[in-house]
Figure (cartoon, rainbow, N blue to C red):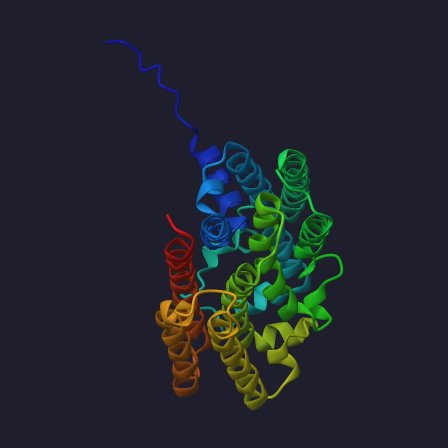
Length: 320
């Protein structure tokens, strides 16, 4: 019988790869790549298939994979070091809505040193590919380069480095970083920032903020114990409900803005009506049940529906 010469990955190697993928939150960050879809559909039809534009977007995406991996990895390293992940995932708030397998540093699948090395390499990877993307891009306005530099340097500062979430600035970062992931590739491809694109970028950011804010609501005890100054920690339960309601209202007003100002088609708000309805449902159900993780899960669905509605609106408004 002939020997089997096929090459198979060893179980140990496969387990390590899976552990690093979980450390980088590969399932969660897939939603962030939708920023490129929003940016691409917001381009003029003749620019969408331009070779230089497509090449720029691919190079930008390669860099984005590194930036996001670094953000997630260094957040986990800090969460283990300060004890917040132990409190939030191993304590009384542990739940199948956020399974422990997502945290390989807690399960022992990876060490902190391995995670640190991976996180540092990931941010270098991201920086190099973004430099290449900017070098070949059809447009390089100064505001795009500055935004990209801020996105590269500040995105990892949520828990790491400046630890902005420990200084009361975490929610701002949760809004602006995802919005930047839409603005930068569009700016490199088109060289401008129309009002409609800015609204769509902020809607993308609000989608992630209204996932993170409910996560923070669930993590109040663990975050407070380590000094993370989220709005949920700093306010009373009633104050946090008001804050979440204000974010919901701001999101709904943003949906209406292009129709009211003329930045987009008059029917833009109608096109995003399903997303608006789901956003109201997310907040209303939280008020009724008080369950932040169910609201978080509904936020993920709302985010994806918002992206889908935005993409369809772009294609209908700008043409296929």
